[in-house]
Structures are given as structure tokens and as C-alpha cells.
Image 1: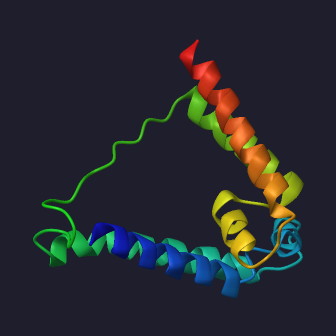
Image 2: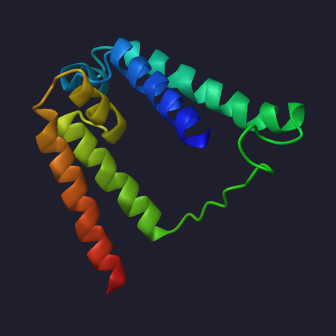
Length: 133
């Protein structure tokens, strides 16, 4: 059941990314250049829905549908978080590709995104090697 719900949620996410044109790097770059503010509405709507879900759902339900209790996620802010966020932002700004929309873009037939995903994977691999040392 969990796999089916995850698959359906992923399909909804991918459809939303595609419908909002976030899978098109040129649209994302236009947003980052302050030329197109449509994606601000998309991201703002996503943040609002997530905020409401994370704050209200635990108050309305005794337990989640697919688990026995709600989990908290402690976040740790440190130098690595700040540097990683900055590097992610630079990479996003240079290519206009974010991991989720890149995967959804492959589903829509934009095979040029394979290169961006290969770079994302290579960067994560290098960071994993660095973290082990």
C-alpha cells in the first residue's frame, strides 16, 4: 500500500511540475532572472500547501494513514548546510535545473536533462566520498 501511495504522490508531483512548466530550464532561468514570476506562484503555492499540511494535519488526525505516528525532523544548521545551499543555488542558476523537475522533464521527453541529472549524481557522489574522509 505504501508503494502505491508513494507512486501516486510522485505522479501528482511530476504532473504538477510539468503543468507549471518547471520542467523547462528556460522558464526556470527566466524566473531566476526576474523576467517571469509565474514560478513564484507555483513555489509559493507549494510552500503554502506544505506548511498547512505539516502544521494542521497532525492536529486533525491521530496518526498518519501509512504510519503509526507523526515524525519530527530535527534540522541542523551549520557551515556545511550554508555552503551546500549556496552551491545548489549556483548550480540551479547556471543550468536552470532542479532535481525533481529534471526527473519529471525526462518523463516529458526532454532527454537533454540527462546531462543535468548526471551532473547532479556526480556532485552527490563526490560529496559522499568527501564525507567519508
